[in-house]
Length: 518
Image 1 (tube, rainbow, N blue to C red):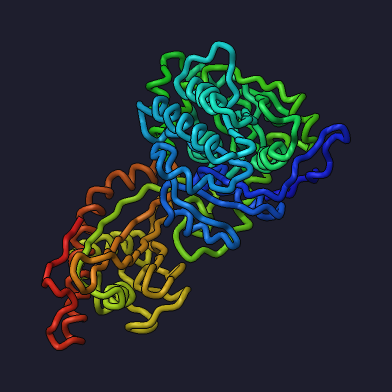
Image 2: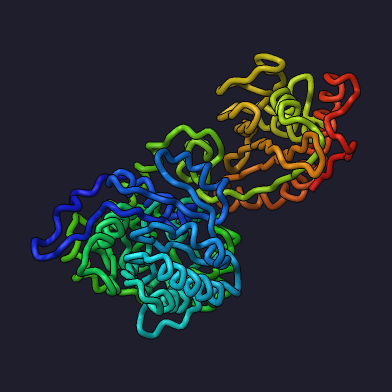
């Protein structure tokens, strides 16, 4: 990510700054902005508490020096622990992925959070909303506005930052543009492509979020955040194309309604359908930004749209090695910037009476002479098809029958990451319109009686390459679901056999209960 040219000390001399020593809560740390804001605040020397609905997702970020807490704004009893001792709380959650009822859920969550923040003695709430025109009528835009109003209903001062298109890897609007331009040389678009907005670079937005929290003058204010360009969505697509060497031919079609547009986007982009539908409703409006006050309060060099795209692409190229699959990371997308950021996924799960060590052994010895524990003939057919088109699908073998290390080949798979006794991540090596990951995850569970109780989950992630990659996934998804259910059940049975052999038939579950497949 490009460093900002401005520092926190570069504020106007007349603007007073508050003490920066208090604890900061990033509520919604597993989301797009939250996941980038947490390390940014840490670099600023702040004491950071990261909150999300799922602690495992937080732990997967592998942040160092960050306090993690599991909380949900729709569960009021979970909020006091998250807010205890907090000076500044960043409110970065929304419910767009929940579908048609997201507006009501957003308001309830904001009300719960405002009340809990007041009770905890929080000094400031910083809320990230969206640019909102006076004539806004889409549920997405109205919900963003009303969420801010609901947060302000409490006694804690709120600083609301409103932004339009955020230019950075993982931003839903940016990923829609990327998928369209990279894979559709001819685009039939609705009239909303003529609507204008003010895109802002992710790094510029993060700089604003960090700095306004410390300014007295920013309390109880609504501040627009924008980049230097005010351009149409059509220009956004054309300029992105110029940066990546694409020249899309765009044809506006008046019959594409917002509902039809949302359905079309869900077919030709990998952005989740519920999020695409929520975004589309607001795209028919021009979204001008009056950002003069925010520029005065927190001056910095603002990147143009083209510069923002270049920064986003460079941020992806500067990938880090991960111990597990992580949404959008370039190493899991085959190091291809035109493979979709968002992955399609299918899973199978089995819970059984086997020790984690035995379950790990079954996962770590997959392939080669052991095969895939279930439906091996289907794996062979897929491999044969790959071989016929010049791929490595019939390749068999592995370096060692039981040991694994990063970079090992297992048939046509490559070991990308592993955490012994817990997780194994494999890269799909056969040919296809996209990049695939297969991950085995092992979790010990509490048993109602003495003995082992272990959950094995297998998940396939597919980063589609355009429309053909999506069609490929949709065609194979039912088979994946069937195979993974059978596969996890067979692997759990094998793990139970391993335990029984080692204990001379005694078994590992005191109650003798069998596995359950899900």
